[in-house]
Amino acid sequence: MTDKPLVIHLLGRDSGWDESWFVLSLAGAMNRAGLRTLAAAPAGSPAETLARALGVDFEPFAFGSPSNPLAWIKFGSLAKKVGAAAVFAHDPAAALVSARSRLPAGCRRVAILYRRARTEGFAARTDALFAASRHAGGDAARLLYAGADIETAKSAEARRDATRARFIGEFCPAKEKPLFLACVAPFEAESRQRMLLDAMPDILTNLPQTHLLLAGDGPEYPELERLSRIMALENSVTFLDPDQDILDLLAAGDLFLSPRRGDGAGIMLNAAMAVGRSVVAADSGAYPEILDGGKIGVLAESDNAAGFAAAILDLLKNRNRRDHFGRLAAARAAKTSSLALAVETLIKALSI
Image (cartoon, rainbow, N blue to C red):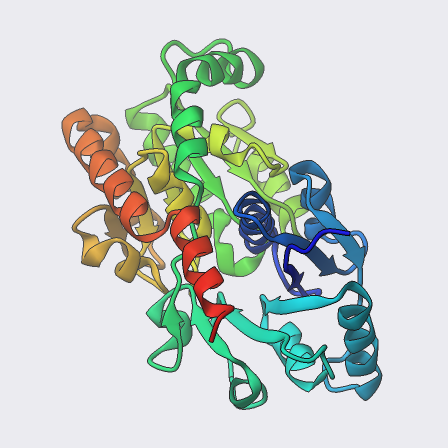
């Protein structure tokens, strides 16, 4: 029996792939820092798949309604069974269950917000409340920018040429010196990949070697794939499933794009910055905060495909400006959103 403190990372059914990727990366880093971690999330969720890939212990746990007392009893029993020293809740529903469950004596409750949420139901019974941006948490929470492991990002950047060669062979062998645009987001209406598809004809008219990589999953995928065919973009757009090697995809790109509306965490934006990619993002959610008002990346009009296309073309045609933004982005990510900084901050929260 080990005497290392055990931390439960609790995720509900609404935690998306990007949030789960960060949480499981965080759990793995905590293991390496001398803790034990257990991810608890619904069976079949992105967290389960990523836990297996990243070597984190996983417990299938679906608590249903967070206001159901049976959920509190069930989670309290799990926490006592494993002897949890702390619970990190990664969405409002999970935070509510953690706050109302009877946990082991001395067990700390920590909540992290990745999107705007009402906190009245759990904040008073939480030992520490963090948010991935001011947009998500306002003044009620401490900042904890969610990003990537910097050393892993550097390794992905070192493999960039090899990854690009593989992508060219798999996705666009007929294109000479392609320019890859990468977007990683759930396939849902708020992510607005449709706007990127609408922008592609203008981009291809100017730079026909451009190729768009859309990684994600979600209900909008069939419609996006259909639109790609209707618009005759099959040879210039590739749909990909996200996986634990997402940093390789981001490193291989020439630009990272996110037209997503209201993203409160910018996890994939921060990850792209960590591998030194310049970005074009919607002027929405946490993106102005992360990009320092447009000083280290381009903020485009939120609902304008033509404006997005113009911003993309401007950076694709200006290599010096693109590289400059990439260097600024990498420096910002290393300073504000490294996984090591997040682990250090959260471990300190255990001794409140």
